[in-house]
Length: 251
Image (cartoon, rainbow, N blue to C red; front, side, top):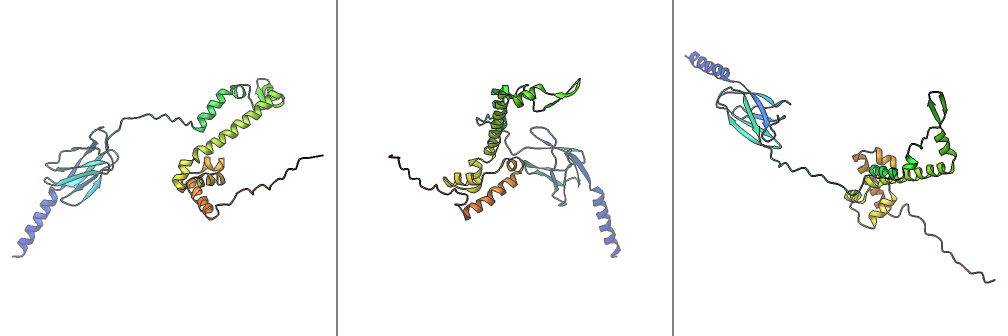
C-alpha cells in the first residue's frame, strides 16, 4: 500500500520539473533604449538568481506564475509575473536625472596652454630658424645646418637660446604649481596659513615627481612630508643673517 503514495509523489515531482523551463529576454534602458548589462534577475519563487550578459540577454529557470525581479544599482527595479514562455523585453528606468551638458571654461590656463601662448608671442625664437641639430641631412649628403650654426654662435642666437631656457624653466615651475596647488595640498594636509605656505615652500616637489607620480603616489608623498613637517616644523629654515654694523668713514 505504501508503494502507491510514493509513486504518486514521484509522478507529481517529475511533472512539476518538466513544466520548469527557461524564460529568456533582453533588458533595455527605458530612456535611451540601449541594452543594459549586469542586471540581476531573481526568481522569487525558486530563490535562484542570474545576471544577464553584456548584450543585455538573460535566461532563467521559471514557469508560469513565477515572479521575476530585475534590479540594477543605478536603475529602478521592475517585477513581472510569468504568463508563458514568450521572450521578454524588460525596460528599467534610470534613477539618476540626466543633466544638460555644460561647458566650463577655466580662466586658469594649463601649463601646456600657457607655454603655447608664450611660444606664439615669441615666435621668432621658436620659429623655423630654431633648429637644434647642427648636422643637416640633405640631397647632397650630411652637412652643417646654417640656421643651427647661426643660433649657436651669433649674439642674437645665443640670446634666443637663453630666453628659451628661461621660458622652459618657467614652464616646469608652472607644471609643479598646477598640480601642487594650495587648494589641493590644503585638502590633504588641512593646514592653515601661514603653515600651509611654509609647508609648500619647504616640501615643494620636483618636476620629475610631478609629471611621473600617480595620484596615489603624489598624495602619499604629501602625507609623508606632512608628518616630517609636524615633527620638525623649523627644519629647512635658513639661518638668520648676522647683524651688520655700518660705520661711516669720517676720514
